[in-house]
Amino acid sequence: MKNIYKKAACLLALGLTLASCENYLDDAPKGFKTPTTLADYEAFLRDEYTNHRVDITGASQLLNDQYVTLASLASNRLFNANYMWDENADRIAIKVSDETAYYSGYAGISTFNLIIENALTSTKATEAEQRVVWAEAKVLRAMNYFNLVNFYADTYVASAASTKLSVPLITSANINAPSKQVTIQELYDFILNDVKEALPYLPKVSQTALHPNLGAGYALYSRVYLQMNNYTEALKYADLALAENNKLYDWIAFYNANKTLIETPGNYTTFTSPMGYNYVENYTYRHGASSNLTTENSIPVERAQRFEAGDARFLSRWKIYTVGAETYYRRTLSGAFNFGGITTVEVYLIKAECLARANQISGALDVLNTVRKTRILPASYQDISTTDKTTALRAILRTKNNELTNTLIPFADARRLNAEGVYPVSYSKVANGTTHTLSSNSHLWIMPFPQGAVKNPGNGTITQNVDK
Image 1 (cartoon, rainbow, N blue to C red):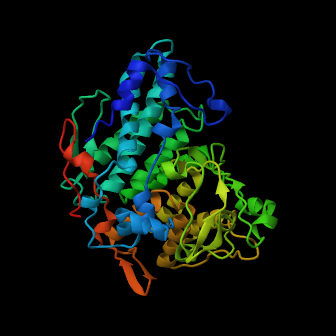
Image 2: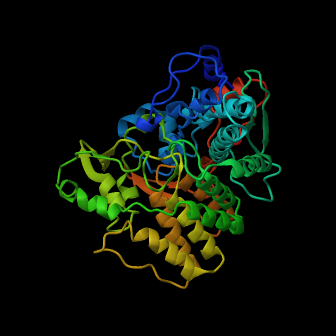
Image 3: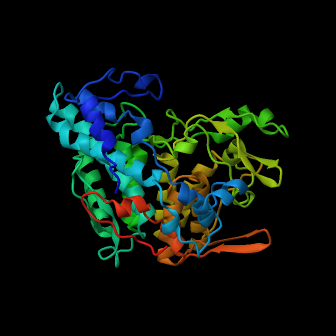
């Protein structure tokens, strides 16, 4: 592994200067200093572009949630392998250079380790204040490990989780800290324990959008338990999270407010994204990939067709666009996008799935329709009503994929469903007269570690979790 802690070490030696993410983040420490006070360590949580970036480019390309231009497919072999579902491509050989998904994930973990190691002995703070910052860092570290294990390792299956390897586990910010590539079970246990230890100290109200609150802790617990197929615990913590925040954004109102420009043919004026720091659905905010910190991805025509008719959220975000030989849905929002954090809509749909899994179909659809009523224009809206479990689950999963497109969650869900085998996820498309298929059992569902990490693993070892 390359020295993913170099930035943290430099910050310790030279101090830090932080950017703000709105007026309420403008009180970060100024100048250079060695962190000693709690305020110094808490300031690391505000370094949003370093510690709050969740890059899942490979996953969004594999799902075709992101449109990749013909020029990019021709010039970038890894993009082509994922986007065109090339089973023969050696992605390990292709992935030579640094990869943001890996290195930014561990850079954030290094920062959170630094806070966890030092917050409780920092100065100029009460023990209660120290515990809050310590707990916030615990949740963020757990989030990063969840992202990494669901990108670079196989999905969680209880019968195999104790034998399959996950990702390197590092718990210290020390530049020479040892790492061990633990099993999937060990890493999930670690994630759950981080959240468990954090919950008693998380505040009900966040200091900023970047600071996890109690709702975020419950929501993360629910997300992790769902990925482990533990629907009872996932439902329990979904309800607790929704008790902290159950707000849904009114996308129908947003569409109506911008309807004239949205419906004007050939107009590609960008609107300000409502999915930023103050989005009412936020439990905690985190950015997506470095390439879309202020814009979001355009999407393929085939992907656009999977949205419901009259989906105001879709209509407000993308519009059909043709340039040369390429036609796709071009993004029409700019600003900030909570692609890496946790929102209420995810938790609503976790709850809906858990209820359906327990054969509480009516209750599950009540939850689903609660979400849809804030999304689907009245002229197109009808309650989804069925007594069939499979029909209900497919409707829930469809809505969830559409709501959380370009986040890690549709990728993680697909892997979970494929491992279960009851509701497998596969895709097919025709490009240049050739049919391309992504099967539910494809090895492409696991992303390989970058070669730089495997060949230079620091104080540990890394074994690839996929053959190519």
